[in-house]
Image (cartoon, rainbow, N blue to C red; front, side):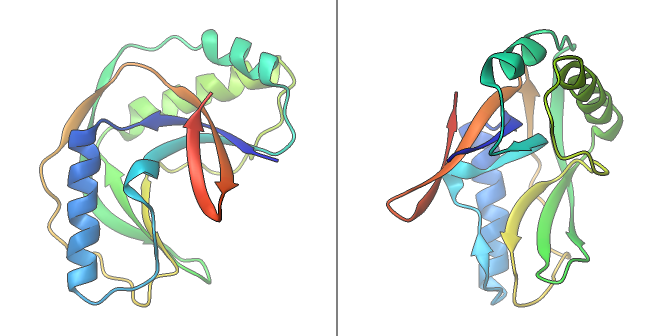
Length: 164
């Protein structure tokens, strides 16, 4: 069964910049589960495998926000057992407000979601052999004009993210 999440999808220019960061990590000898180019995104809300798609669509359609530019900032990591290296963004408050509004609308329609602390980030690599965050981040920005409902599923052993 697919897993559902709501995300900001990236244009090719942004994905190229994120891939260049991943390449820099590889050149430094970091191994792990790199997020494939086509799957690079920013998750806003994770819903999971139990969902009512019509309610999710209604909730998302009611989220109004002013378009904004998303700009890459610095690398960081989460202190989990497996570890994650991520790229941060400059627009924390704007994205936090967007996520808050999105969560309010999902709650109004009875949609369950992972309700933990939200920190805007783009996961680049999971389970890295080493945590390195001193990679130079290329200048990159893109306009955020919409948010997308996505599904995550395994197809022929490969994790595929598709907008629905």
